[in-house]
Image (cartoon, rainbow over all chains, first blue to last red; front, side, top):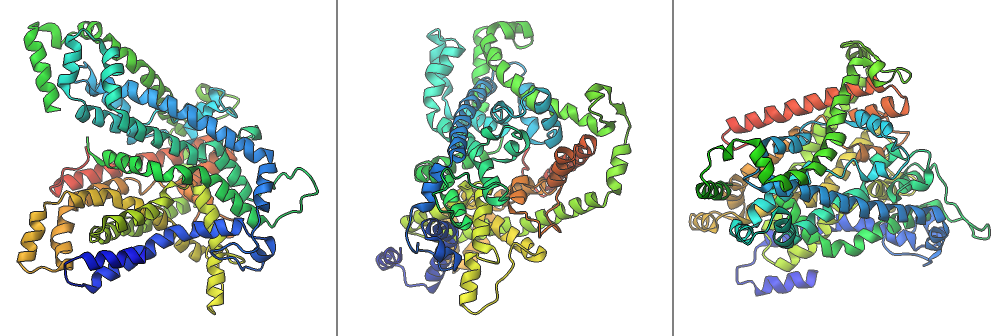
Length: 299
Length: 321
């Protein structure tokens, strides 16, 4: 990074300014502060116990070993949690997108009678909500405690995502295109399916990612709703009990496996749970940034 | 919006029927497909957002499981009188206000400073590489961040303490002592949100008319002068709008963030309103009391947003509604 900084400064015709260097240094330092904690945990997860216990591992693994990861992959409950998280995230994202599109398309049509009333109904929850306990009671009364439905259904409607989708449909789809389709005899369903949706692919990608990332990372609702049925714990909740509370120990299959230092196991769990995000992060970052800017656009 | 209403007028001009714009029956017949689409999201929003709002009446009832939601007795404001007398409630309100105000002070200002610095960078590549790292913490869950925090900051074997010790300092109980915990909590919040928070400001800065900078240069303004007199005033609207949104959350606060960073040694500042609601309602089963606390929080939050918006409008900005 430093090398590239140097060459660019050389190419610049402007005169040398010490502040350019200072500003770059500050930014690099902040970037490192964001990156290094994770590097440290990766290093720890690949290190031998003895070095970790002696506090010898900082940014590079010492006594390189896959031992901790072997143990994670032997722990059936962690793999099951990963599986639960994937299923829940996939279903939640699909349902969330269907709901968002079904609401955003009619609300973006100027001709819809009662449009402002519907918009108010859909967006008011951004300002005021029943809160933790009434929602908990509702889930309880619906008999969704200890089921995956409690993690899929309640948050599938999001006022915020709806607002983004609606704004995008209003500004992104040329009315003339839609009118042309109408003159050709297309009805609303057909226009939505063949005109609006194909033109909305970027915003749909963005919102799907919002839904998926939100679901993947949340653990509050699973902490509230998944109590008895420990088999249904999503990955983040499993991680919470394993790493933060340490109330649960790793279920090691065979006694032949020597117990690892819990710190190493915790580190490798963190890496394991973050890996899916890190793998797709470089590709999705762009969509997130776009979505965040759309979200900032006012009604 | 304007374009749409214009096209609407064209349509009505083509079909000059007076009742068209008034009759629900006609609207239903013509746009039944649109209304049909709305049925699904309406069902979800009514069931999962509005039913809980209705459930807030439990704050005015003495809820007993045996009697159920409908059968429990009305008690007026008695529950509120009860909770206002509880020391835990006062402490939760104090902590919530304190943590959020401090958050506003640091987590709100740091992205502005960082965005100003980033906008000074001419090299697109340098910017992009650093932004990739700066945005990273935003994508981690609070469980992951909590785990990272303990790996780095714990007194016994945290990496930061190892480095401090090797440099000859004492080990610091970053997360194991109340005051230190408070600072760590704030620092972690800044760390998580700082990079991501720059996005909106950067977008706002990039839309500033370059002529303004040229004019300032001609007038002999240097880098900092331009930042202060051109950039900052130009993004003032964005800052005010985001401030309003954040002021409305001053009674709120993330349950997940607190809960992932809490441990038994630090209980002084960790009792916030969402934590208290969880503890009273879900852990201890005192539904009415917890609902009352939640209602108290939601009403104050709503009032705060509305007031802040009114103030912003008075100041000459557009506000958010």
